[in-house]
Length: 611
Image (cartoon, rainbow, N blue to C red; front, top):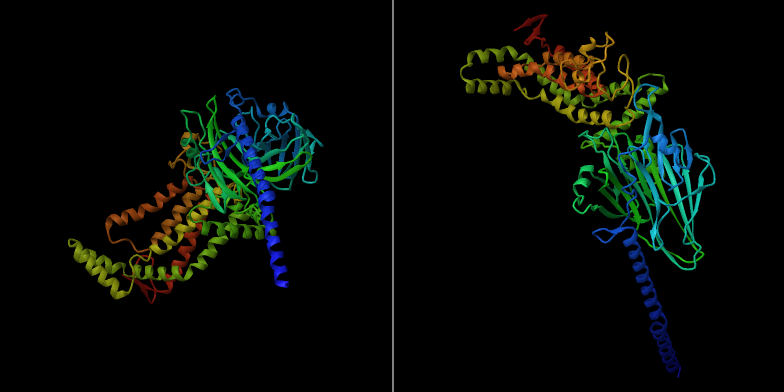
């Protein structure tokens, strides 16, 4: 009896479960699917009116700048800024304003950086509004069933007149379709903005929204063209650094149909921006949100080049009547200071932001080298040593010498032995001068008997090459070296030596004509490259001369060649090379004296040189 009741209970339960699934849950799922399809259809209809679909089916945002805004009749930047209602922004690092006509951050000036070492020179301008010569701005907004809003075409009202690190600013606006918009801007003491966007649906029907953030730049910076670093669109997408050249985006443009061909990738979190040599602007989404990240180019009707990087939230928000939705984005706009970038990476979870600095192929050397230089420079500054980054280069060179000492010491000992064998090598060349093959055999036999390596002198040079390129990268791309002075006439380690022969190395206060100072001409030679050439010549005097006369002549010309070759390199790099050569000369001289080898060749016995 009990078993019968149990079976009946199971049967009734299964019947109820099946009936629920068939008559209740099934229709509800069908209704949800139909609603999702309706949402998609609404959004697609809106995209046809306000945007486009990319080739992969993802939404391509409508243009941020209409062609009629970008024209050749640009106005002075200050005049354009004064023509709009704006909220000022002010911190120790940044100044500028937010445009209330569209909510754009389009006026950023770097308070701590100037165009030159002249204290009266203009401060660096990072972002500029449309209507000025080269517009460059950040914009945030929404796209969906009610159109595109929150950016261009939205007139905002502000709760206060100035944004500071201590006082966030709240903007509000309403759309014609009953949507209440709220945007809160916050700014830290350095270069990071936080933008919180809220939409409340005051209409009588559901709305469907996706948030977006983008950077738009018209034309490219004057400094573009350095082949050793990347300038242009950049981002970290799914943990991978992506760098795209301006020219690549331009080449992909469909000029016949005037249609952008965006590069779009799905990612969770990350960041997307545009980088210059020293400056970066980047939009940073919520790191837990999936977005479509895009780089694109389009040509305006006036022929201007418009570059855009944007992030579009993949999730479609359904906002019922009376409900609201909120999203948070951030904007980095400022200098690529290594410590600041790593701080944002570690404390605000902005992945690999420090990689906006172009560390190059030798990044595994360049990055730690920059870190060591920064630490040493800070310690030197703490104890009152001026020109701290220049002195830090000298200290790092000594550290590298100590680190490579075992290998370099072995090489210098071998070169000293070669120097001692110089008289015997001369005898062999005189004896077998007409028989090159026999002379080479005898030389190799002598090397083997004396246990010396004829190519040992290359080792110190080979060791220097990666460090040379890494330091070149540090001096050329890191803002810490920009306008960093050294002793004497050097006021900027990242620039070439300011002295030259035309000025008698600074004795005569003449300005060298640009056509004479350009290139690696004789007139462009400065004092530090001259010192480097002398130090290289001294180093050569301690090395054994090549057996081949032609090679020997080339060997003697190398100091002169390098002297002019480095004339246009950053003077900090030339100082490093000179100091490294002098340390090498001292090390090799001590080794030669200990081994009894004279500078001119041969050995020293009882105070008498034997040749």
